Length: 147
Figure 1 (tube, rainbow, N blue to C red):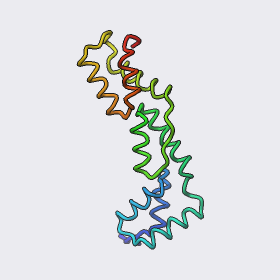
Figure 2: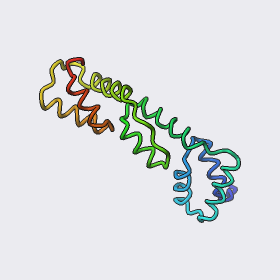
Figure 3: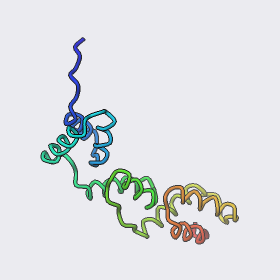
């Protein structure tokens, strides 16, 4: 069995980007974990930029945020995830946040018509854990008669 030659940092970037888009911070982190020298990482990232393989951070941020919106994540969760990836945050759209939070509560508590105090607290914690801001949580929980 032939032994394959070790991958270069550039080849590793190429393989990672073939699977999905990555931010520069993600690529740098993954290359460091594979013990590539910093100079080789910098050269590989520069070469990938020259080849236009790396997406614009704003576009990448929007795509990532759209995926998380579809998973009904709150704006705090989304922006935290983007920050972790080294991408710019996205603005909060109040109507979308309210819609997602109401949808989650309707799905989770479909049988309840009147929330008890404990159920309201539990629902509020549930929404907060999904990354919704306190204003959205308050609006959804206090307007539970519409649910």
